[in-house]
Image 1 (tube, each protein chain N blue to C red):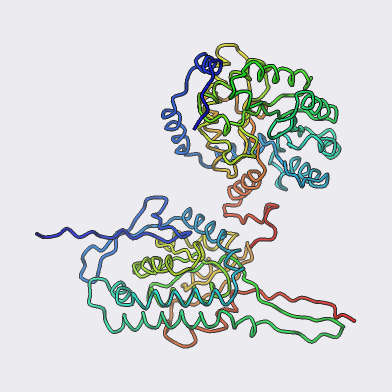
Image 2: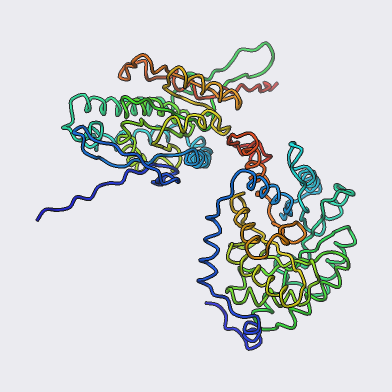
Length: 288
Length: 311
């Protein structure tokens, strides 16, 4: 007897729970053969607001974890993705047999997670310093997380690009609210399911799907977001910078007009972490 | 297991009329579905600010902390069109510090008295505390009822104690805390409401909770008490006011409570003289939402005098 397959309803990871949009809105996505794949949540600015609240709740705990522990948790995420690499490769091109390119993207994503897992207890020593001063003081500079960071991922490379943007942020002890690729949201949904079982505390990474134009102004102006990391076109870049100016948030932008090689070595490393940490300098009198 | 009702408590419940538990809970769920936008929302948020009893009831309260609470009550935010809160609510020993900080300000001083929150001291001690608070300048007294006596069926004793405290209050407004979480059933809450209202004056309050127990003001408890106030008003013409307290932390919750007031008692009760919120964290969320409405942008909580150490 033919069996009726049970299809998965895609839901977004917010505060460790899987949510639909509060508006109930969805948008359909079709697979490579043109067949209907699923309806994805069309998140609204209220969902973004709720996600920021979830990220705020998670932030003090995540920032206070030891650097070593954050590294372990990131490494655990790599383990989760490695075990489900085939499933993720299928999600990158639904309806088609996973291509070598899809597998290459998944493997690069796993390597990128491991890369930042390694950095998590090392960047402090390289970005911080003990400073020479002309008075009897110890003067040292230490890193601190900036806070809650908004991420706007590009349309292409829906797994690797998203992870490349959000990994340096959480490595630095920040929490994230990210908007996934609009045209290829399935990898982000699947990533959410892996994040939920990876020992990462609820709310550290919150993933939304939906219409970029609806959410971009709120990303730009929400005062509780302390930084933005986005791949954006010229007009979006202007909107993000103008909106961010009011609440004085850091903005790190990559232009979407020219193609970005997300596999490249320069898409990872210490300087991406530096973009999302504050440097605090302390003067301490030297004892007699 | 709820304690067995004694004959006198059962008689009071029968007289007050029982509460339809399922009906009440279904009804209050619908309040959250009302759509309040733009001007109505700003109106309701400001109304909620003006209805606040800005409260600090901690063992570590100091005169300095009370003074800054009073400043916040008088001018909650730098934007000019935000009203002052209705009152500050402090322990009786701190009333004189609040009076010094407020001077002739229209912000009233409410004091919890009568061995708050348990009420477990001799009546003479409780009355002395009320008189001392009034003498120090309290405009309003928040008393707790004797729950032990109520549940044991000593109904007349509870009522006599409320009447005695009312006399001790003199001109001060009295608020009677039923501590709904310790009354166990809606029937008991309604019965206790009537018990208190029968000895209260026009403009005195009944209040849900102390905020010191695990379960605080819920929309359903609030509704049971609002219904009791309406029935008492229709029978006697005496307007009793209402104060939910404890657990109301967000502006959204406050708006839902105001919907309940509007739809149960009407506009006449939508004033600080007839309805209050006992809360501390609520004020900052109300201001945060008002700023969001004014600027069009979501605000960070640390812009509103709380959690200054957080991100």
